[in-house]
Image (cartoon, rainbow, N blue to C red; front, side, top):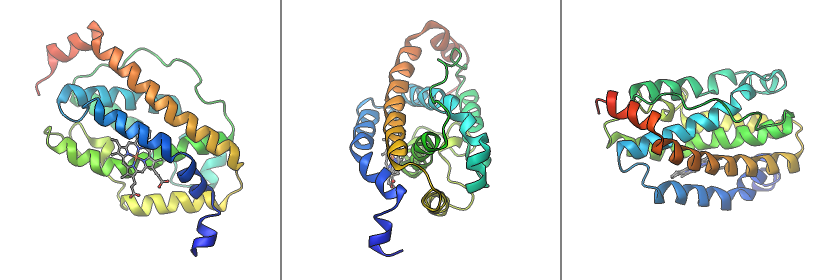
Length: 207
Ligand code: HEM
C-alpha cells in the first residue's frame, strides 16, 4: 500500500493516537520488574487474566466475525488460564462487570489493543524464557499465532481498514483499553498481596 493510503487508515490512526499511552504502559511494566522474577511474572499473568476475561465476548461477536473469520481462534483467554494453572495461580474473584458497552466500533478499539499486544509479546516471550517458561508451560499466551505474528497482524489490520467503523469511537476505545490494562496491573499488584493468592502460590508452586 502506498504511504498516502496507509496513513489514511484506521489502523494508522489507532497506532498514532495510542502511541503515548502504549509507551507509558510499556514503561510501567518494565519499572514493575514483572519479568525479573517468577512472582513478578505471576503478577503480569494476573493482569492479563483480568483484562482478557472482560473482553472475551468480543471474540464471539457476529458482526466482527464477518470481517475476521478467524476471530475466535485469536482469543488467548484459554491459554492464559492454562498458564495460570502451570504457575499455581488460582483465578481471582469474578469480573468487575461490563467494562465494554457493546458497539462494533468500540469493540474494534479494544480488539486493536489486545491484538497489537501480541507484537510486543515477542520481546516478553524471550524474557520469560529466562524464568524457565516456554510456549508450552507458563508462557503459552505469549506464543505467536501459527501463521506468524507479522502475518496475523497484517490480516487483522487489513480487515479493520477495509470495514466501516467510526474512527473516533475506535480511537477513544483503544485509549480506554490501554487505561484499563494499567488498572489491571494495579489490581494484579493488590491480588498478589492477598492471602488467598499468595497462600496458593506458596503452598503449591514447584518453580
Ligand atoms: C513491556 C511491555 C511491552 C513491550 C516491550 C511492547 C513492545 C511493543 C513493540 C516493540 C511493538 C511493535 C512491534 C512491531 O511493530 O513489530 C508493540 C506493538 C503494540 N503493542 Fe506493545 N509492548 C508491551 C506491552 C503492551 C501491552 C501491555 C499492550 C496492550 C495492553 C500493548 C499493545 C500494543 C499494540 C496495540 C501494538 C501495535 C501498535 C501498532 O499499531 O503498530 N503492548 N509493542
